[in-house]
Length: 310
Ligand SMILES: CC(=O)N[C@@H]([C@@H](O)[C@H](O)[C@H](O)CO)[C@@H](O)CC(=O)C(=O)O
Figure 1 (spheres, protein in one colour):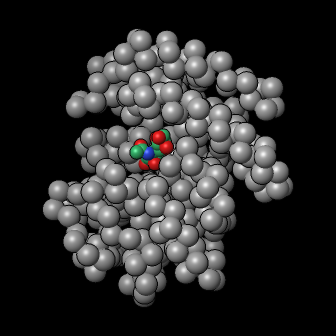
Figure 2 (figure 1 turned 180 degrees about the horizontal axis):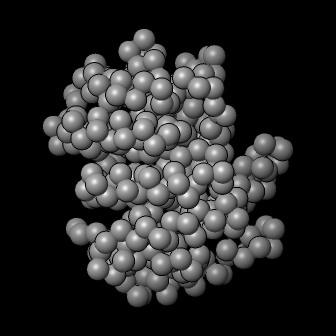
């Protein structure tokens, strides 16, 4: 495998821009890349994940999106990780081969969640069959039990993983079980693996137990503020880091009470960035106007420590 720059800091879980009639809006990706890099200081992306509605897209659409992010991100982005998980092995393998062929910086795989693996060995066997299709590409397990219902603890999965998946690079950890995350970090004695946290509203707690970075939806539009939180944490200025986390938490707590998911993320990103993200794909439905008005007013009302506006 070619030596690579270690992935740390923020990774935007990309949104899939769509036209009003529900097609993928590929031409918008160029502007999207520039926005992330120049306005949010975010240079890593995670494509076709939850926020990207990856599981609601056809294989062809997922390939097109992956290609566009690779192409537009060339010389601008540091890492492009492609999520290649699906409900069946052949599609995962096809997407993994495709990601390798286009030079992706990493691939990630969610646990299949219709017929679910019931223990660590079944899960690792599935992941291994996907990873081996891209033998030169760093591999991440995408742990998101609230959506998959697969609750196999990651610390268990790590035991002997490198022998079975030589490309294993780390975990995108989208769960609130910080004890499991801490145990993973404890096992990562040589520091070879990366643990990227995926619950944005409690990233600071994950950093405190040793997460290397974060993948999330809010880094599309709160990347700049969250980067300042990371800087404060590294300094260390914990009081300042805490202020940032409390403020992003205040916004998320507000929108979660209104009903917050991928459709609402698309709406927030559209009004913050000015880039049209379009509607979500069914079964998700558009955010309501009431949501948009209230979410915008809330975000505008937040006074960030740097005196910045969102
Ligand atoms: C369930 C969910 O969508 N979680 C988000 C978070 O970024 C989430 O939107 C945020 O913490 C707000 O709750 C990410 O973990 C998902 C993600 O990274 C992805 O799109 O693959």
